[in-house]
Length: 288
Image (cartoon, rainbow, N blue to C red; front, top):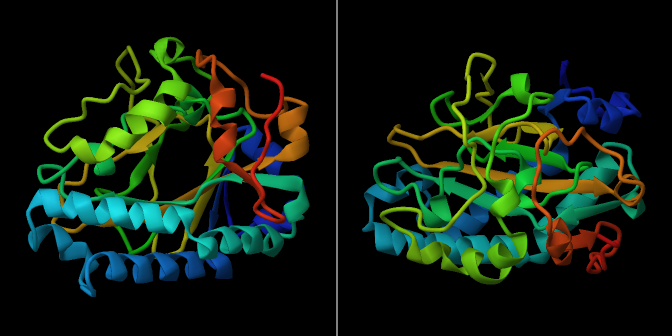
């Protein structure tokens, strides 16, 4: 398993590398930095012009914070600018948007853990995105909006890429999540009442890696990697942006990373969240 820095554009077969567990860090992608600039603008708008974004949790009760974050997420995810930048990112790495679909872009907000760690700021336990119904060919991107420390970032645990984890994904429903649970995020403040697919065994963190990146420095990795939120006990809110890409032909032919432990049976329910990168039309899905 390899870690590449600024080499996506120079590796025509980078998807195959990702499917084998390799991780890429891109520090100078123009579109990545523009996505972070868009996120900062959106945060300011959602919080009534306040620009000290990393201190927002100190300025208001948690209920108000949740209300503003809910509006921020809705605006960023559904706005046309973020989608256009995803299309431009695909072009920037030398690929053709006609060949890709993407999941809706998201801005994540992780304040101090004791202030809020549920609902709109849920601290994800170690998981694979495939447990949440994602396809094996999913390419994850993730980048901080502001420079972060290891205590604020996300973790990836490469030691489990081909090592099964006993987990609850077989009893979890993506369809229920989309239609019922997702909309309850704003109601989960003191604790997370929504059910997530989680490990049912203790995770060995000896091979865990944490990348403390600067604004707009993007990680690209397989959604099949075991990863999760690092509990943020600092006094700064962590903002990050992520989106997921799927190569259409790889999806159709069921190519991708190895499935070592995923039990989710209704992953096709998530296809309605996917868009064609070329024209932003809704993806119609494939036979489950």
